[in-house]
Image (cartoon, rainbow, N blue to C red; front, side, top):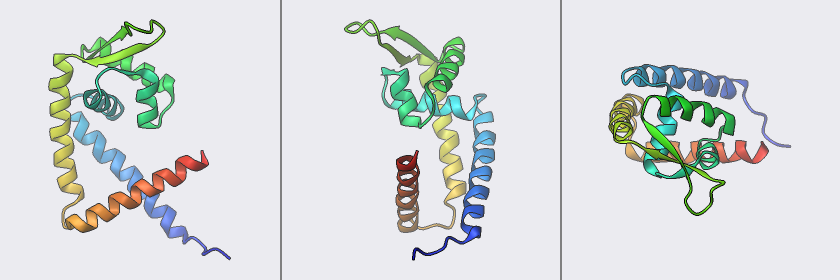
Length: 144
């Protein structure tokens, strides 16, 4: 018989999720962008020229969600969407210079947030936590 999960486990994870989202919003508000748009911008900065579906896959969100965020990012002059030269069916997303500047500001804010989050946690403990979180994400996405 499998070990029974303590109800407090899911409550702690839910509480962490809520607090993390709230703190993330505070930090992204500092650079005048939503958390979701910041995540899209950072993914594009890391891999310029992704398609909308590739961005959605990397963020584990629906394509329609990415489409809406990209529209706002494009209106703000942070990204441009262009048809792929080799395959006209594909639309690729590229960071603009303004988008690059915004992404640098976002990473500065998230760096500050990481310092807050990992205060008092050793490098080894942090690495272990991140490995566990990665495993939890993998477990969840396997079931979906």
